[in-house]
Image (cartoon, rainbow, N blue to C red):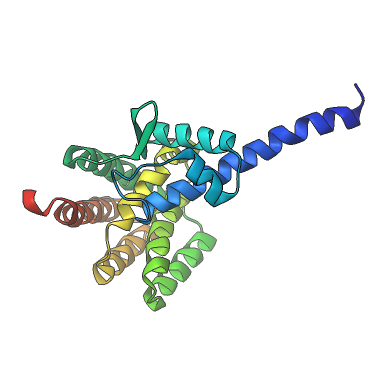
Amino acid sequence: MDATGEASRAAPTGELAASRHRAVAELRQQIIDGTLQPGDRVVERTVAEQLQLSRSPVREAVQALIYEGFLVAESPRRIVVRRLSRRDVEELYDVREGLETMATVLATRNATHEDAQQLRHLLAEIAEETDEVALHRLNADFHELMTRLAGNGLLRSLTHPLTGRLQWLYQQNSDWDRLLTEHRAIADAVLSRDEDKARSLAAEHARASRADTLGKLFPDEA
C-alpha cells in the first residue's frame, strides 16, 4: 500500500481520538462546574447530538469518565453522574493533602527565579479577579503550578489521573479571601525555601478546604 493509502486509513483514527478527547473534556467540565449534577443521567445519543459527534467517541468518553470516577453505570443502559458519599470526599482530601504537601515541599527545593515570577504573577491575577468562574479556574491553576514547580515527573504522573476530581474539589471552595491569604503564605514559604513552614501551611490549607467542602456538601452531618 502506498503512503497516500496509509494516510487515508489512519485519518479516521486520529479524528476519532480527537472527538473522544473533546467529549471527555466537555462532559468532565460539565460535571466539575455543576452543569451536570450528581444523579443526573448521561444519555449517549443526547450528548452526541449536543456536541455534534457520532455515538462512538461519546461511548468511549463515557467509559473513560466511569474509569475516572465521575460517572457510574447503575445498569447497562443507565449511566449517571456519580453521587459522592462523605467517605468518598474524605478519601479525596486525604490524597489531595498528601500530594499537595509533597509538591509544596519539593517546590521549595526546585523552584527557579522564573518560577517565582510566574507564581507572583498568578497571585496578582487572583487578587484582581472578581468573576467567580475565573476565580475557580485560577484556584486550580495555583495548585497545578505548585505541582509543576515541584519538578518531579513521577509526582506529576501520579497526580494526572486525579486532576479532574481534584478540580471538582477546588470548585467546592469559594471563600476567596481565605484562599488568597493561604496561597500567598504558601508561596512566601516556597520562595523563601522554608520547607517546614511550606509543609505545615500546605497541610493546613488542605484541611481548611476539607472542612469547608464537607460542611457545604453534608450540612446535616456537620
